[in-house]
Length: 284
Image 1 (tube, rainbow, N blue to C red):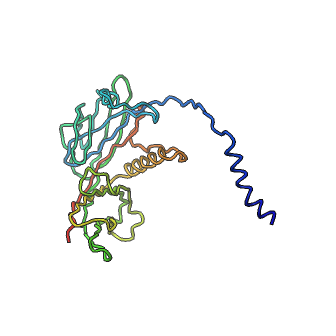
Image 2 (spheres, helix red, strand yellow; image 1 turned 45 degrees about the vertical axis):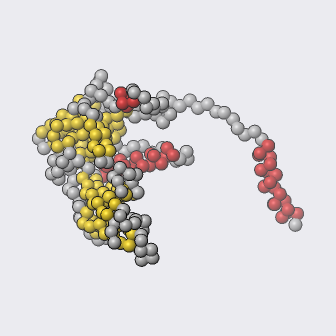
Image 3 (cartoon, rainbow, N blue to C red; image 1 turned 135 degrees about the vertical axis):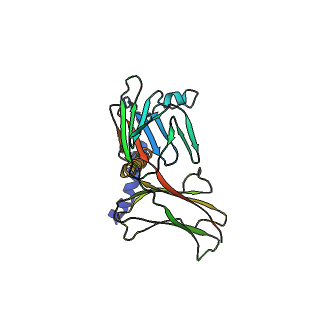
């Protein structure tokens, strides 16, 4: 009986002792100075102009003011940017532009439109001003993998709720990678789904993406399926892991897997963005 009582009382004694101690202590940590890097985001969309966003990276604790000098501090200006493909070279000029749906901004824009021809190789070359170094990258235009159908199914239990199943046909002879986005009611809304997938574990030629039974009559569903390169798959996965690491103090740092390189020590991605989008309005 004594041992049982001690086992019951001992934890409370330990807690009382620890509580009575002053365990708080201020610690100064000298962090190394962060050396910012140029960040490239260039997505070649068939039928749209050649466009690129070139910015500077910031340290996690660096001030990031939103005053009138924001764009001047963040955007890299006066770089020489060219993209070569199929025997020709296009220059991207230091002009600000944007795409309204969904919103994307760029600070370098070309005069020509991106061809949709699969198999074309593209090479990016950037020379930064003031001997800031160079950046290079390469990618290939992938074929479009279209959405076969988007099917609305109502719940057998609650007939006012529905889901949408999205189907496409995959080529089992080719290793394919995808990014799947799902928006409700507006392309500018926060995606309900945004994830990567590949066909490594598929046992048939059909690939399906679905929602839960969470939609009502009149809801609009935007299904977007991007056929992406392995470079972009690795890059976007590393970005997601880095975001998770920043939010979790116990997570290991995750490096960004870029496919741009050069003496400027850049981060970022240069890739073609080939996608199909289906807009479905839920109806009975």
